[in-house]
Length: 374
Image 1 (cartoon, helix red, strand yellow):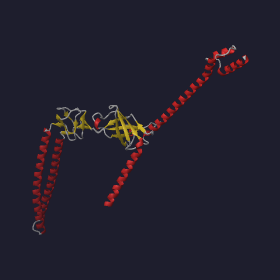
Image 2 (cartoon, helix red, strand yellow):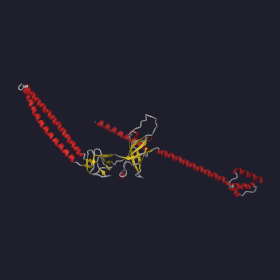
Image 3 (tube, rainbow, N blue to C red):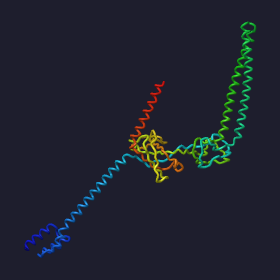
């Protein structure tokens, strides 16, 4: 029986080693003493528990790796359908207001940040000198008209004398000298009439110019917008071309500078989500309106010359005009110059292509109907 116990101990030692709780039982077995049944049961359960923990760790690790792989694949499939850039800002039309004539400012009708309409008066200059010049031009025009009337009368009389002298000369009633005198008088009257008419045209042009100069003393808004950069005040003397203020239109759009590698699937009409830093938490709906016909460097003040020296390829950027679909509720907060992040949905490529196809078909159909009507 002791031999059987020793063989059993050797088998257990080879199987489990002398670590953990199993060592106590093996020590007992080494001394040839009967092992406690509870200790032997605990010893047999330890390896099975260890294998279960390892198996669970492998299962959890595999599930986590699968989740990460699937998540990464889904993210890639989703992200490849969008293109965005943080090199974007809002912009609009800005009209610089300047004077066309020199003069003293009589009144300034607007103030900073004031909303104005097209044609609204902004600045009025002192008009007295211009009114005097207009009156003088009108008087000159009247004088030239009188000269024309006088020259016309002289011309009419000279023409009658010439016609009479011609008839008498052909009838050999008057001499050649009298005929030549009548001819010279007629030609002089004709030249005087033409000169008088030319002077009248010049006088009328001077009068119109005086009227224009007088109208330039009233500076009006060229478009609807908001006043900005106002530097003119009452009493200032301004010069032609001097900047007085600016009218900023309220129709704002986004200019996004996308990399050339981002334009492969970008088309006009695609939907764009725009986030503006000054309006956090709100996403504006917009669409691609147009692409600039050239990169930003093409229209730079000093465009690059890649035909000289060493060449290093640099990814270029193309400005893309993005127009808001509706931002009336935020019109006062969306102003030119704001940083924004446009995100173009490339999945709408098919929709944009279909829209262009429909528009092209409609245009062709209209042309065909016109030809039939003709």
